[in-house]
Amino acid sequence: MLIGRKKEVERIKNALNSGRSEFIAVYGRRRVGKTYLIRETLKDRFTFSHSGLAHRNKASQLAEFAKSLELYGMHSKKRLRTWSDAFFALQVGLSKSSAKRKVVFLDELPWMDTRKSDFVSALEHFWNGWCFMRNDIVLVVCGSATSWIVGKIIKNHGGLHNRLTDQIHLSPFSLFECEQMAKARGLSYSRQQILDGYMILGGVPYYWERLEKGKSLDQNIDAMFFGADAPLGDEFDQLYASLFLNPCGHIRVVETLSKKKVGMTRDEIISESGLADNGALTKTLNELAACGFIRSYRSPGKVMRGKVYQLMDNFTLFYYRFMSDRSRGCSDSWLARSISREREVWNGLAFERVCLEHLPQIKTALGIAGVRTEAYSWRRHGDDGAQIDLLISRADNVVNICEMKYSHEQYEITAEEMGKMFHRRSAYVEDMDFDGSVFLTFVTPRGVKRNAYWNDIQSEVTLDDLFRD
Image 1 (tube, helix red, strand yellow):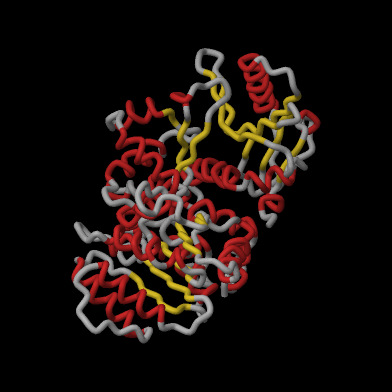
Image 2: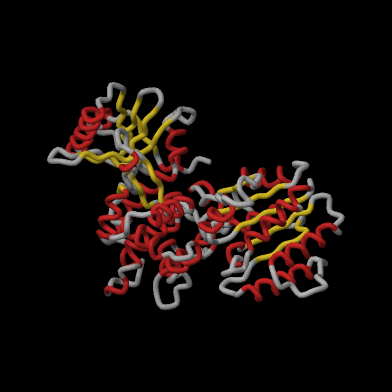
């Protein structure tokens, strides 16, 4: 059963009825459900479908392509020696099809592009020289190596430049969609438990599919990631190796960013990681952003060089906090950490990331869904320094300073904490010479307890607000 993805399904179905040839690229991080979306939406409409082979040479790729042609009644009379041969055979087969709309799905495209294969050139010729001249072809491509899809297809500077008719970035599920998935799988988890799962797994459907009913969330996390036989014990290495051709630089960047929750400037990344300040780093940062692993933002008053990069991928953050240290003799049990101080600190950090991933829901709860906004973190160095993890700057000359607090109970503001918030507000107003309104906002699962300091805040956002569709 396909959960969510309503807008993406609608775009694909619109392509089926457009009356022109369509070239669609679907991309996103590994395990996010790209192939599943396409197969569930187009399963009865494929005129031809093929998936590349992992870590196989050109001859093996072409031999497998020939098998796919035969499976769809497009048998080539001669052996395929080049990708030009392969696409010509596909062209001939499609020409003989009586289907009104001829749907072609090429999955794991990057795996077909082996060294010196001329695969991209052949694909360019297939689209430009034949498909584009017709009005009945729907070509859909995707692959796990998102950086390849973005670089070779979406941002192609050759024959495929501006040839895509649509590009669909498949994002991870929201909390609302994960709740739907949990219900469909009979997990019987509360919203608090789904939140806890999201802080580890993010909205990656594949991870949620592996949760077994009858087990608590902690039991499932133990079974999936910890212990000798954990099926996803090496997920981190596989994840980055599948997405990037040479992932060492990408891993250095995310490891560096994992140490600072508000993010780092490019200069700070270079200083901390030891990576060179060159085009390779720019490419690495762009690829990580395209895959959704990091986000970038500019704090007000900063120049381009002060652009801040922040690690956003939930699983990567979880890995560096709890999985990468196992070689240093740390516990292999997630259950053993359930009531530890380490886990308590992690809950606070991870909850902040979940809030950042649900900014549309926070805006809706604040009644500003239709207001143009910018969201960023802000900090001032020095003896009277201050740091705000989430600021929402609004077009109506209002700024929301958001305090994100993880709690199983109603959150109680103390005198000390309110004093810190007042200091942050004053520091921001002074630093930015801001003459608008500054609203203090709490984002916390169970809301804020009514005490002497509750009237000092202007708004609050709860867990139910974050679960809005």
